[in-house]
Length: 362
Image (tube, rainbow, N blue to C red):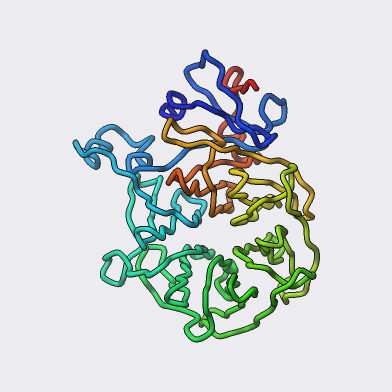
């Protein structure tokens, strides 16, 4: 966080704009939304741009042994999606390097998903990511028309969906791995596969009525097993039950809080919140499971002048893990930001002390 504090120029506000920092800053600052309130709900935790960012918190001897005298280099070229296992490890698909990065905050290491021999896996265009309850990682490859599955150790296990998928993008996996839901934007549909990759169901066609789609980009499951689909060019989220029956929809195109300009990805957390990134508005929007708008975080900011908590430049993929950790791909800034929903467990481990909260000014 020290680098964030030194370099911080702007703080994302609920209004969707960024405010200026106060000139004097305490030794430690924490950034919350809504800002300046007695009941904050979201905290900015950290950012990850280079390998050294995964070493923060490591003992000095570990940092020195790993980093040596090398000049830090950016990890990502064109980051697309992110997925966290909730236990300190997260994955980032990168269309530029054609790899999936692995960042482990417990062991302070970075690497890649690999083949059976441990070499970086030969993706052609990795995109969507998902993790099941056993820690297996699922990666959609748009150009290979398949889903590749990796063990918790990061090594390739199998491929699914050959002959069933055309352009797989966002995906969601059941906790037990028994079902896989895949968004196919160009086909305007959702494909459901079983654990062996056999076709279970396809639904959707191009249109604007309930149950139809216009470039669905991403999917996720709520705690009850309902499916949330980001219907991107219809600027809405549609909700279906486990059998694919339409339940409800929410969202609209616009610039007001709670509306979308160009939504790119969604995630549902364990506490019942839906997060949607809006690339053109450089922010993410938070709803409850029924679609009621709760909060908007973010605003346009180039990290060339320093990292700004809540500042984005074309945010893309987003994930919420089972600990209510929130990870957001900041596309043109080529980094990932980490936030946290302030559930009881987080507040018990990280109580907010007097003077820690940074209050932005407009």
